[in-house]
Structure formats: structure tokens, C-alpha cells
Image (cartoon, rainbow, N blue to C red; front, side):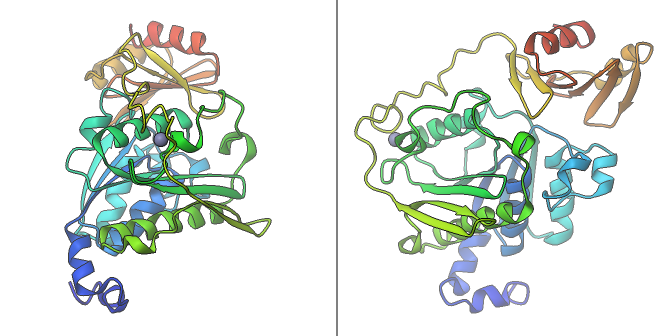
Amino acid sequence: MNERYSRQILFREIGQAGQEKLLNSRVLLVGCGALGASHAEILARAGVGFLRIVDRDFVELTNLQRQTLYSETDALNRLPKAVAAKNRLAEINSEVEVEEIVADVNHSNIESLLTDIDLVLDGTDNFQIRYLLNDACVKLGKTWIYGAAVSSYGTTMTIFPNKTPCLRCIFEEMPAAGSAPTCDTAGVIQPIISSIAAIQTTEALKILTGNTEKLHQSLMQIDVWNNDWRKIKLGRPNEDCETCAKRNFEFLDAEAGDFSAVLCGRNAVQIAPPRAGAIDLPQLAERLKNLGEVKQNEYLVRFTTGENELTVFSDARAIIRGTDDVAVARALYAKFVGS
Ligand SMILES: [Zn+2]
């Protein structure tokens, strides 16, 4: 152990004792896209003993410019990101235990994902999940590190429930759908991903080794293209905050309703059943093969019909490309996968 981590142990504020703490730490990575892939690599190399990685998507060629864990082969095989990440991390540091979960994070599973976890890193790409994560972490008293990056700028903040402001203390209302730029509309360059991930993972190392007095205690904003770095000092939690003051967990308490449909990126919709259930992928592939082009691996079935492409996962979720109309996506799901 000493050899692998020797340079990190020499760093006095971590030392042997800090390294032991890292090896015994358990971290949840929510999302394993650009930020999440960087979190996973940095924390695995640092020797964080257990990483639970949850991601709903699979690797595509457009990811490779910034999602540093993945390869062309992963994209060709359309491997789920959580699986591709686990494979790559095993090559980097086989001593780290990685639990890969291919799933959509939602109100029905977020609390169980937080079980036995010391710290959560935000590698998601949308505010819906972040508000849900904020609800769950405040409810269960888990520390989490918010991070977001698009274009050449990014933001990060470390949240200790009821000690520091939570996400909702700072951003009271979720931005309206479609109002905020995304990587699919504004593009993104890799260095801002590395910068935000660097701040988030440094905060993680400080927390996990007990160096909390060194936390940056701010809403940090960075624009690597325009050379703008700023820290907005955080005050006390907002006394009127719906989440941390009133403990009104409206995202967590959302009714388990009908199929959910969310836009994910440009021209794609995710359809998820109200409760995740197993689907027989070989049987589905067999059923669809006379209706269009079918490709499959052990994690998913991809079916192309006209201008649409349906990727169905074993938990019965589907990502439907070629439309941003939820009704159209829902109809395609009902027609080809079933309702
Ligand atoms: Zn709050």
C-alpha cells in the first residue's frame, strides 16, 4: 500500500493516517458522464476504498472528447457508462471496490443508494436530479458536493446539511426546462470538466481525511476560457429554505405515478416505468428483429425504426433518440416495448 500511495502519504495533510481513512471510505458517484468519470478516476487512484457508481446512460462517440474513462471500444459496444467505468477502474486500481449500478436515479431509489455512504459527488447533468439529491442528502444528513460545467464555465459548492446552505438555499427555484444552456446546446470543453472535478475531488479528500477546516466554503465559479475565478462566500443556511429549514422534501416525496419521461440531451427522451422491473432482453430482441434493425449486448437492446432509435435497458427504461417530443417517445415505447 505504501508504495502505490507513497507520494500522497508524503503530502503531510493526508499522511499515513489520512490514507487509512481513504481506504476505509465509501463514496457515491451520482452520474458517470464527464464530471463523474473524472471523479471516479481521481478517487480510485487516490485509494478511496469503495465507489458506488450509478449512471443511466451508455457510452457514445460524442462522449470521448471529455469523458476521460472511456474508449472507442466502449462506444462501439455501447457499454453502459457504469460498466465501462468499472472495467477501466479495475485496470487503474484493482484494490478499489466498485459497485456499478445501471439505473436512473429517482425518488424511489435515491435513499437506498445513499445507504452506507460517507460522501456523495454530483456528476449529474440536470437540476431535476440535483434537487432530488439535495432533498435526500438533507433528509439523511449526508454531505454532498455539487458540481456543474457547461461551455467553458462551471460551479461547485460543498454542502453539509444544516451547517452550510443547501442547494435550495442558494437556488430557490429550479431553472425552467430548456432555459439553461446544456452541453448539448452550448457545447463544452474538457478543461472546465477537469477544473470543476479537481475542486470537487479535493474537497472530497479533505472531508474524508478529516481536514474540513481547509474546505473552500464558497459557491465557487470558474471560467477557464475567460480567466475568471471567483468565490462567493457562503453564509448561514437560509431560515426559510423549503428543504433544509422546513424539511419539505417535495422532490423526494413525488408521487410514484405513471411512466416518467425526461428530456435527456438533444433530440432524446428517456422513458421509465413507475417501478423499475426486469425485462427479458433476448426475448425483446427476438420480437423486434422483424420490425427493424436490432443490436444487443448483455445490458441493452438497440432498435432502429425509421428516424428513431430505441435503446432499452434491462430495468425496462428506454432512451429514445430522434425526437424531443415526450408524447412521440411514449408512443414509440408503448408500441415496441410495451406499456
Ligand atoms: Zn437549504
